[in-house]
Structures are given as structure tokens and as C-alpha cells.
Amino acid sequence: MKSVSVALKSHLALEVTTLATCWKVTLKIPRPSDGKQVFGFTDHAADLVVDSVTYVASTGYTASAIQTSGALNVDNLEVDGGLDSEAITETDILAGLWDFADIEIFQVNYADLTQGTMKLRKGNLGEVRTGRGTFVAELRGMMQKLQQATGYLVLPGCNADLGDARCGVNLSLFTNTTSVTSVVSNSFFVASALASQPNGWYNGGKLTWLTGNNAGLSMEVKSFSTASAEFVLTIPMPFEVQAGASFSVYAGCDKSLATCVSKFNNVVNFRGFPHLPGINALASGKG
Image 1 (cartoon, rainbow, N blue to C red):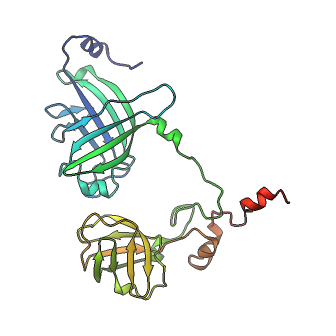
Image 2: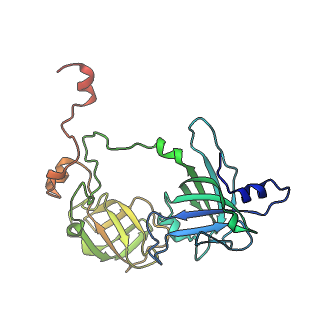
Image 3: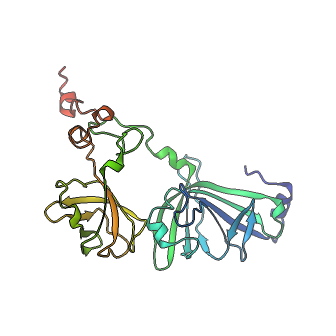
């Protein structure tokens, strides 16, 4: 049962209502360009201010029907809207800034905001896709968290992320900054200054653009070849990679014990179980 004020409940009982839907988005991290973290949008014809948050009407959107069930399934709906240069930009979406953002959807009486709100849904953003000047965002209900694995799996390889608190590696010691020498495609380019690094040194590492069309965006390195310092990225960058664009990149880790010892000298923090018996040994029944 939804909890609403007496005044709003009375308004909902009228034959004609003045309702507007609002959705509040809270990014996991502030947007680098301006530090903004909370965004508000509404389907009303004018901006609304609710609890000190401005819900902007200029970025129009259309929401699908909300699907709900009593079987602990994940509630979901989709929101279609237009990309706006100040609110939702293609660059921010492609950079992953909107991934897993917290969402609150509610309705208000735009003619009398003092009546309070009626909460409709709360959850997180799922998949966000972009099109020709538009975006489609999937909103996932709170049951989504029950569909995800929690904790750490017991595996031969390390389950920590390179450089995190559990790993302890100082990434600054394994990071290099340089610029692009030549470009083959948006996922394949050369950085001659790094030709002295061992073959595969950056495989699985993270590359972050500092200048150029993709400044501020990051991508995982698929492979690095010493022969001509060639980088191949896992996914092509969304914007054209330019010769002369600078970037920083840190070494990759394949999560193996051998790499932890020889490359990072960090075996004391290795989080894997490399000596686990394989499935064949377990199935054999031998001690």
C-alpha cells in the first residue's frame, strides 16, 4: 500500500487531476565536467522544484508501463528521452557515468506541491542505449539485487581488482602517460614511446584519454604488441582517435599467481586459490 498525504489522496479521487511524474537520478560518482550528481526530470510542461531538487521539463521522456509481480521477479520499465547538452549527453552515457545510478520515480500534484509525493518505484538504472539524439534507459527494481552474486567466489585466479584495497598494488608505479603516434582505427593505434615495454604488458589494463575527442573516457586494453607499440582496445572508442592525443595506461593483470609474483611482486595479497584440485580429481573420488 502506498503512503500519501490526505490532501493528495483526496486529489487522486477527483475525476480530473493535475498530476505530474518525476524521476530523480543519483549518479554513483559526480559528473567530472561539473561535479553534478543529482538530476531531476519531469513529464510536466514546466520545471518543478520538489524537496530542493529541480525537475527539468526541457528533457522530455516517455515511460513504458511498469511491470510488477508478486513472485519476486524484477520490476522494470523503460524510459525513452532526448539527449540534452546540459542534462543527459551521449558522452556521459558512453563513459558509463549513468551506469547503475539510483532512481526514484514519484508523482506530485503540480498545481499544489505542498500535498507531497506518491512514490511509484525505486531502483537502479540497467542498460542505457543511445540512438540518433535519443536515449533508452532500463529501470530495474530493487529485486534486481537478489539476482546478483554477493561475496567472492573460490577460484584458482585472484578475485581482487588490480590496485584496489584487497590487492594493494600501487598503480602509479605501473602507469605510463604518452600520446598516440599513428591511428589505424578507433580501437587500433600506435604509441611508439612505449615500445620498450614487454610484449603484452598492458593486456587487460585500463587506458584513460587525457586529451582529444575521447578525453575523460576509459577503455580496457585487449592486447599490446611490443613490435611497434600497437594497442588494441576491447571495444572501439565512441569518438575518433586522433594522432597526438595523450592518454595514461596501466599494466594489466591476468589474475594468475605467476603474474602476481613476477610482474607485481605482490604474492602476499594474492586472493586466488591456485592449488585447488580440478573437477576431474574431485569426480574421481580419490583422496
